[in-house]
Length: 218
Image 1 (cartoon, helix red, strand yellow):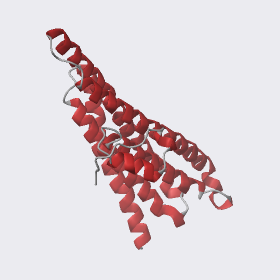
Image 2 (cartoon, helix red, strand yellow):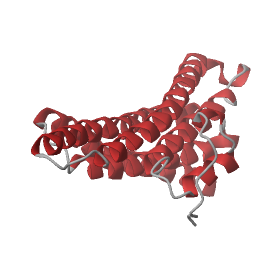
Image 3 (cartoon, one colour):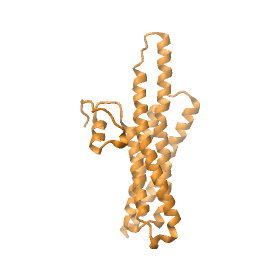
Image 4 (tube, one colour):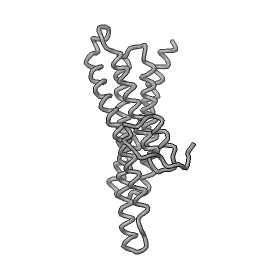
């Protein structure tokens, strides 16, 4: 439930405690919001998959050592990227609210304000667009790792896929809400392409989860 108290002075999201972040998320302030949450969903997805990879090492998994090493490194990079995107989103959305507060008393001010809003919206749509790309890459890695993964932790492959799905669908909403105010056809095309990838991500996440559930039920 949101409250009306302003949060304490902000610190980088990556340095925040869970309670501290949730307090900021629940506060009546423009950011962090859904875009930052999408980034953290993506970070959790990559971290979970990295954990599965680290449990899939040793003599028993020697035949898959190269795959596991590659997935581990990729997941670590994706996790770092996703946290950065969460932070970027919070900053970008604050810029949008600042642009809407610009004066509009004269025609010149109105034009400057409109241009600033357009720039801010385009910038705000960039982090969630990149979150979608990160989620897709995580799902791809989950597909690769699943056949070789330690069977004791395959439920976490599905959990990673579900977290990636949540990242993608949450990011899609944040792209779409900014897309309505963006007129640049090239920017709109790039964002629309990213939005269209989300259905692919959800379908592939469904397949991963279904495969894991079938295996653990047998």
